[in-house]
Length: 537
Image 1 (cartoon, rainbow, N blue to C red):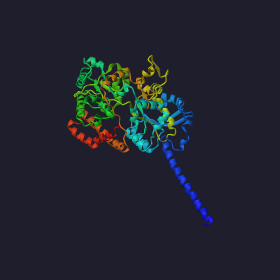
Image 2: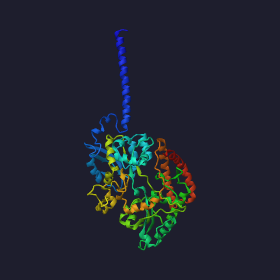
Image 3: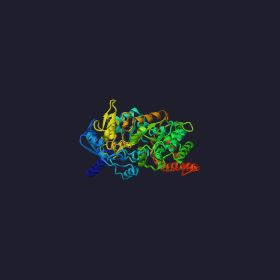
Image 4: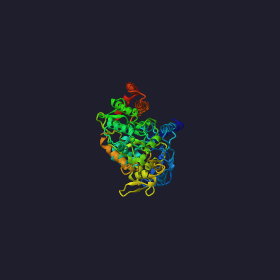
């Protein structure tokens, strides 16, 4: 072999070895990208280590100012988020400036879906109420939401402590692939554990000379007295005996008919299995009861129109005899006319109060997108609100300015906010995001008092002995199951709400019940049961 051939062979060997090394490097880079993606960064971005810009604890969170974009839903009582008092103060504390891009509650779900479809994502999502199906779609499947497990372990000591203390919190927010993509609003208070409480107008009760009802039949008799005996004393028959707020609140009294709200939905837990009761005889009996109330003029005639403005106007003037609300804050001016009362015993002897939450009632309150360049700072930003100090801050604001501690060490909101002419919730919405709920934070018996008055706490305590023994959150679903559940539930919920309303207001007679159940079965109610039961942990 001449020297030129030897040189050619050697050159080929060098090129092959170089290419082989390049291939190995490429595979290693892919693996690095995959690993660092769990923290929201590519391998190139990961060269900037958190320690170079982030303080592990205390304030400020970052030494040099950082700006993040934020998307979320704004309650009607909120000020523009950039003007909310705690956010302005927290920006100074943290050195993180949030570019808030909030949108109104109305139509929010559609706007959220369009945002993900366009893939023009913000850095952070707040108060977005991600459902299990959306967590599967945007987290597990598309990875537009990043896994938060490692970030929580390293940078979220407050949330980590809560999950170690109460494993149901972690269970509820863990997706089907074993990762956490969204953070919850954690409510550990007794008043928050029970969602809707029931209140009765004791001034009217005294006027008609009757006792607090103990059974559903007693309730009906009291409502008739409220309708017929002019308890408000104005000489007109303008009282509204039973004020149910909207179509979602119509199920509040269902426990008296044996209907639980497992998974915050229309399910009972029977021998460890979930059962959807929308076609059960007990639900039919409940609807017949509500239909009687509506037909006899005892139930607010506009309940199904979701007219919140009219509802609040009626409430402010104490126009309801009996009604269901989570807190008394929205009728503070007439609160002294109302008292909570015990769960009612129904026709079959059931006296369950089923409208209850698990501790993490809002599982999708916070998330970080895969576009966020500082996920460590973002997780530290939100973790403050899961601690005792941050819990007080996010619900009451600034000591000496928006609240004071009383002699028992309990925070008390300032009088000028509590008694504001514009209304308490509107005034509070300038301080924080408490109105409407859903903010990623910790709520305890110490900090629930911002909306949970003593009367609210008393109403919750009266119902606490009648709660279901076990409360099941919605389980994590696989990608395929999540997609199927989402499809079924969209159609089922639409038909359910339409049919339930028609039964109650009398547009449908109960001779249509069998047809209603057949449609429910075609929509996939049994398949939903099977999917959820197969996914129970």
